[in-house]
Length: 446
Image (cartoon, rainbow, N blue to C red; front, top):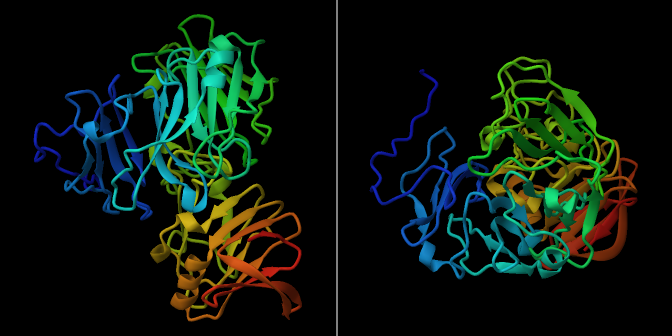
């Protein structure tokens, strides 16, 4: 037991709710302060609930008991929490996005997004999306119960989290594409017809057993898949994997697995976790650090450094709850003094440097996103300036192919080019004189 890290919560006042999950409460392990360390987050709504409480992670396996709390009464809508309707996710994009508390408000027919600040406090005025159009056309019930499952994750491949809703009564998986401002698109609902299947969703609701549903990349292609595990103790002991297509839809020809298990408790609704445990070779030495045992397989091999083997001291990545290619994938790079490039291997990777605490990125002046296919990099002038000052360099360079995309916020196109070591770069500059070179073939948005 010598490796067990203990945070003594007994010193808290008895009025402070800090753990548990029921109809009025929920508990998450997420980095809501943006420092790359997971925090303990607990919600308790209702007239007697203590509100939203954040115990900031210390990075050593313990949590601060000097909590940050937002009282329940401060929220603009009293219906702001609950175990089966709330999510913690990276929502939106750039300065208009961030880690957020997302509540599917059934009574108001809205999706309410409350953004966190860097100190763990949260905005009590939500960014709202009316889902009346969805509610009028489809059954709009509690998102996570025995016949319904919902997620806030990127299934459309643009790096912005979407609202994904699978209700058995609708016989369809419905996707509201996420937008940069933290709202969701209700004008074009992306649908996958699931009418050919009786049991394909549900199971995370409080007290529900016998089934569990997940969004996970099960085949290492960088695209989230719909996974349903089902066990009613009789004939339905199987798993169905509906592979994601990368555009918000899923294959309706599932990969099916059957189980002959004498213990009918192998699935337990909200008790289940789904993800990688240990290394891909089956050993436990390289167990993933992701929160809630929920890493993306693609991201475990998506980043490497040049000229040396990557080690845990060189690279770390935290995946709060999201797999696939969404912007919640926070990659933290600590290079060597030689300022080696940060390189991506693979395809469909979305790397957003604006979401990473700049103190966790050091000694690199070059990012290579060429990989094996189309990848996306987002950065802004302020972060690039900080990286250059830290590394005592003059130019930040991005190596990219024609199918790669670079979102360079705060920069303007100078119309000039330069060549270095036979590589042609287009030159961009910010108002404070920060220089960005992007390989000529790449698609750049400024």
